[in-house]
Length: 273
Image (cartoon, rainbow, N blue to C red; front, side, top):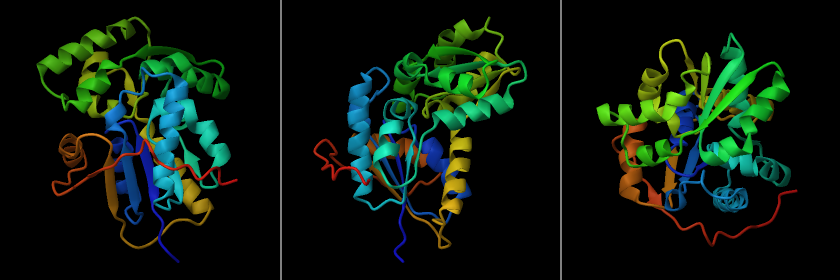
């Protein structure tokens, strides 16, 4: 039987945080990643536009004959997950529910912070998901779209970065949160600066960990797991050089290469069901 890959899609390089976790825990799986860097940031765009872009990425990955799809973007998860799950026959996993579950398992005082893009915060997707799982939790959301711009420019370290992160996260100082969800897949690339800004008493939650746990469970339940060493193919709609620089550093693969693609005219074959 032909080996099928797992598809990952994101607005830019942030989704690599999920790919990194998946490569560590699912080394035998083939993976295909598409980052829509040409049109980021998604977080400032209308939900309908994000949904359209998500479908274009999904259709590109469908033509790679993927067996499962991971929406490695919180904004796209909030805008498009129900639609993609309803129309695709393959498993589709987002990051908001996994992140919410992980946050509720982590918090002790039931005060949880969420930092994300403007679109994700305005959608109230995290607060609604956590309230559905535990009505007693108090969620404080804060939009931090500047982080995406910094990360895509590979500005992740140094005092200048720390100063900006401190300023952006200052509103959380009086929230009494003990847990902070990194509600954008870009944000784990700023983990050190974010942890310094919020202090050692706040535990950071990276939804990627729980999302890949869900992926593992789905692959096992549906008997989709494979046993031969996996490969990784990378695509970007933007600058290959900019994408490769960050991807090589974050995945610790200096020989990693990417290919530029145009997905705006990607053909939609219609729903699978």
